[in-house]
Image (cartoon, rainbow, N blue to C red):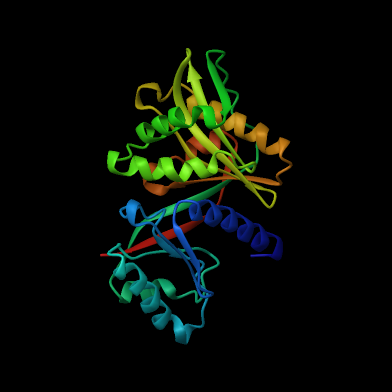
Amino acid sequence: MNMDSLNKLKQFEENENSWFSFFSVFQDVGYAQIFINEKLADDPLYNHATSINCASQEAVEVLNRIASKFRRKRIIQCFYLSPLTSPSDFKRILEDNGFKEWDQLNIMEYVGPESDFNDDNIRVRRVGMEAIKKWIRIFASSFEIPLSQVQEYSVRNRFLFPRSDIDFYIAYIGGKAAGCAALYSKNSVGGIYVLGSLKEFRNRGIVSSILKAAVTRSKERNNDSLILQFLQKNNLESFYRNNGFKKVYSKTIYRLK
């Protein structure tokens, strides 16, 4: 990996980790970055350790230190391993200690051209605090968020909606709210997050329309890159590729058996 690719990957990781930190208690302990949210305990997006960086001889001790933080909160231990993970054999150390690969998190970058899909019946709007309840409702339904967790997302997002570096979107089809997303811009990188649509409106171009709006807005913000991510099990790579995105790298998600 050349220096330009390495720096770009670091920027992408910084955008993602900063986004997750809005929804978790975040700790940068030098040898790792740790995210914990007891109210979203079953979600590995908001409960994991990443950016592992230590010497080989210290790896087992680092694993135990991090694991103890999750055990104290009674949260399943979870690690993200990226091309930046050091030592490179940390995967083996996890497997030797009872961890198993849970999924892959794939990161894609917009390279164009965007999809030529166009439907005059679909409107994508950037929204503010006046629409936060509607946005939360669409988000919770699109991602089947348990009722017990909706309040936590509502509280967290109330701090995010007023931010100038985040754009929130609602997509309408035939005048009905049908999808949502957020665009987070940091250090010339735009990250598309919580991109989804209601079940009854899927396969009708809602997400493609949101992606078009995010691409336009990211350019307006003078971002050098625009990224998104998805779990491998969701099988979305070809869809995003058809919308102008290219896979850059993957991270392996390990959880304790």
